[in-house]
Image 1: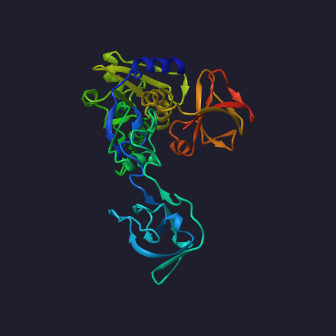
Image 2 (image 1 turned 90 degrees about the vertical axis):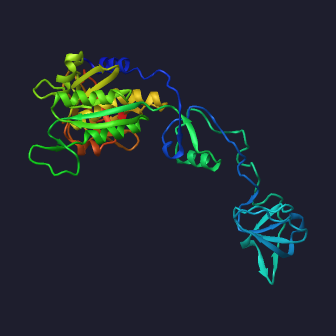
Image 3 (image 1 turned 30 degrees about the vertical axis):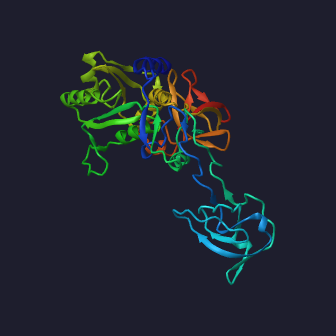
Length: 390
C-alpha cells in the first residue's frame, strides 16, 4: 500500500506542471481569477481629464466668498466648455469637464441660488472637489503588478484605462472523464440502479477554482472501446486528463481495464476516503485516476492535483493550519484520514457527518478537511489537529 506522500510525489513527477508555459492574452470577460504574467502599464492618464467630483458650481477660488452670476452649465457628456470668466460661476455636474480658469467646485448644498445668481459664503481652497488629470495614475505608470490574481476591482481598473486584453499565465488544460454505466446527468429521470453524475460537475468546478481550464468533459459507460476513444480525444487537446471511477479490483472497471494493459499504475493509497488510485501516461499526456465515490473524488483532487494546478497558475496553496477538536474522534490504523469538518470560531474544528465516501451533503456542509495521521488512532476533544481549508 502506497503512502499519501509517496503517491503525491509520484503524481507531481508524472504531471510535471512546474515548467514555464507561454503566457496568453485574454479578454477582460475571461480574466477573472487569472494571474497576470507581466506588469500592466497604464496607456493613459487617469482621470483622462480634469473633472468635477461633485454636483455644484465651478468657480475661481479668488472670487469667494461672494455672489456670482451663473454663466452657464456643464454636464457629464462629451464637451469642451468655454473658459470661466472672472467673477462668474458655472453650474457643473459630477464627472463633467471643469472649464479652464476654474480652480474649485462648490457643492450645490453649500450654495443658495436666486434669480440667476449663486451665493457662496465661505472661502474655497484651490483644487477643492476637482479631480486633476492623472491624479490617480499617469500614462506609463504601473497599473497592476505581475503575479496578481485578478479580481473585479482589478478588471475595473483595466477597463477604466481603456485596456481590453491582459496577459496572464496560461491555464493548464484539463480533460475530465467520468465513468460508469450507472451514471446519468443531473436533470434526467433515473431508474432503479442509476445515480446522478456529480463528479463531472465537481471536478470541472475544482479545476477552474485551481486556476486551470476545462478542456473537455465527457462521460463514458463500462465500455473499453468508448473509454479508449474518450482518452484519445482528450489527449489531443489537454495537458492533463482526470478520470473518476473504474479503478477498483472488481469487474466492469473500465479505466483499469483500458489503461492497465498500457502500463498504468493501479493500486491502493493508505488514505480514507480515496484508497483506490491510478496513474498512467496516454499518448504522452499524464492521466490521474480517482475512485468514483463522490467524496473520494473530491478529496483526492484536493490532496493530489489541486496543489499542482494552483502552483502552475501562480496561485497560493490552500491554507493549512492547526486547530483544536471540539469532540473526540477515532481513525483506522495505518491510514491517513481526511474527515469532513467545519471551522468553529478562530481556533476550533468540529466534525461534520461521518467518514463514508458517499456523504456528499456532509462535504457540502464542510469548509475544511480534518487530517488525521496514519499513526494516530484516536484524538480527544481539545487535541490539536491539522486542517486543510476547502
